[in-house]
Image 1 (tube, rainbow, N blue to C red):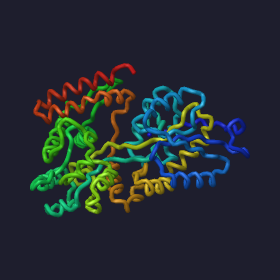
Image 2: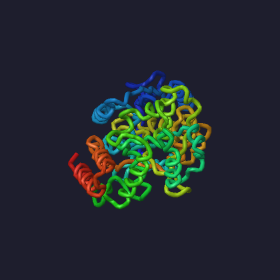
Image 3: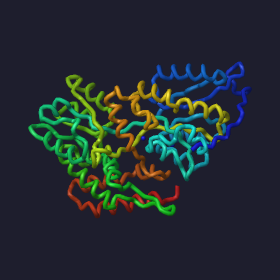
Image 4: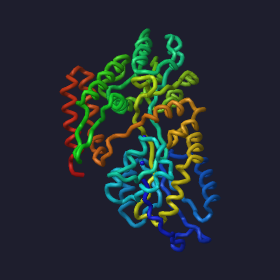
Length: 409
């Protein structure tokens, strides 16, 4: 798959200056968030525009970052800006350790932010995370197999058309689609398409939503689609890595981030130039399928010493000019729907941008991480795909989600 009330304090340029009265601004960005070339270009451009600020970017690893950020927010020596996963903002905001940016949303272009980044960046009605970039799943397909089967990918605009095309592809030794049974992110998209959700909150209490009529319709669609291939019913897209599976066999489609195409061709160079992309279809041709928005938001610790400079940094990096450059450099979806054209020349990113306009996030509560750790959604999906009653299994999984989300943190 992030309103701004910044306490703009004056910077102390003595104990932490970069020399010549310049303020040293410490920033944590995550591995692969930016390339070396983009980082250098941005730092040079930012410091030219703001010569009184010396940006010091430190690249962090995703593994173990939660504990590191939590410790930084609780301490007295926090960095000034931190990149965090969009769905992680709530757990950090709950502690009171983040700067509230609510009043700054309009001037940052918040009316055009991707919902899948903006909504999880808010907590308890206040905005703490500022949308940085997004990524989401698309359909990666074998153009040669589509052509042989007489299927035009450009004509697939609805879920019904997708099923019909996949049925046509699923023959003569070809899997119409490789869809593992536990790809719960894909299922979540279908649930959102139907108007449901993984969990809903009312009056401060959460309730699992897998047993709603909408979610049950989504599971029925997932089951129908999953049957048009030989994806395992008891594992997800990582076990085994689905891009590697696609590289080895006659598989017409997978649901993945566009970067999966590079993994396919790395494992089978013969498929170079034979892969294409299209957005996950929706129920109607005028609306793309709903997708889980991955990606990042930028936050400022409440303890950060350089609040004003931190906001200036965020304003630049999330502004239109640098967002367009970041999207082109990294094949990311920009943080605003109005900037989708920035990736029009990149087929994979362009397909992502279409889907991102209908992007969603997981339930916005710090306890959602505990749900994912146990993940009853995966067990539910396997149970249904192996013949158990969908309604009763959905009710059981929903009870687990309800209990987990309402547990004390």
